[in-house]
Image (tube, rainbow, N blue to C red; front, side, top):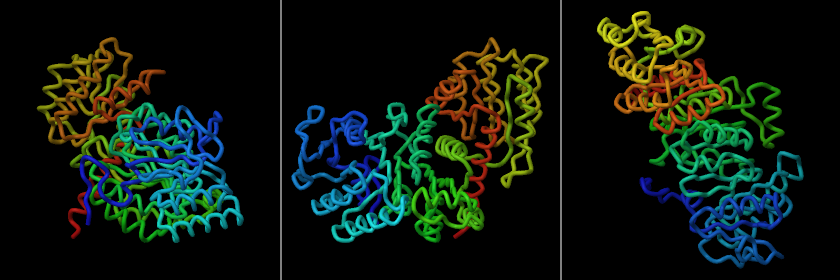
Length: 475
């Protein structure tokens, strides 16, 4: 079986989708606001040839326009079809006969609108069967690959802030959920390996991309938004195999009868029964979340923090109320994965007394009070993480105390880089909170804007650690 190289996208067939030699945009146009214009403009950033295809236009943004697909030069590995549903079938047929390996169909108006659309989808399947080309979509936003500067997403999605890339593969059946996730990534940070909009899945589906990213050395977490599964049993088996190597996090929508009906009208497919999903996911060590916030939060921490050795959590704060709330969330018994407040050793408490004010609390949760400084917080983190009775630390970074400044980010990052325990930050700075969390992320520390989400992130890490322990004990 071929393996991935750290330097590229490997030798697997899907590699050409993410690292094509050249790209064609069928339906590229000079008309502002049209999908063909937006997609072509986005793709001009990539360091590979991009060919506009249009039957009547001569030039586009300094590029000669090619009138027909059959006139394209050799070496085009991806064609993005931006024309409407009725024209897309013929365009896909032309691309297939040209021998273009991958075709992305962004248009809606297929099975999600009824019988006529289903007929069009059958014709797209015939293109795959007769030519061997693979189709992503229809009704798909396509792909976004930051490191390759390949972007077909024609709606706003924070693309500039994601240019550095990362290790999270995001596979989504919904364009709107996908772009919201990309917005979170661009605002407060999680590194994106690739984004894939599945659309209606006439050919390529979640199983293809699970296999691919599961074997990709540069992917360290896979997040999915799904409304239905192409093959539920195969999904569990493949995701279960992948989860032995890296986290797989799934937001499965269509949980209720109303949600399932909405999913069917959205994608034109029936959603799978939800009654057995959660139990099956646990059996195969797949982590399930229940809304888009949880999906992004889980992916961020799983991709960016080490796993804890146990469930014991210490809390450090300069505001006592936040420590109390954190303790309540940590000790909650309403969650399947249990956390517990760590008991700090006498030696740890003695070391803390030597550096904090006499009126501060050195028991867990540690309360540095409004006298906290950047250096004091960093020293406290270093002492607490060294305690063998602590598996994870939540640090509430309030910027109200006069001794706290932006230097706290560097102090926290320095400790996080030296320890193999997760440090999760609660960052609050009024209207500047997103920017603060982004600075923490850029310095290697995962942060959240409230205590509840930070505790949930630690719980996600503990759940993953328990899964890993279970799998290591399974032949």
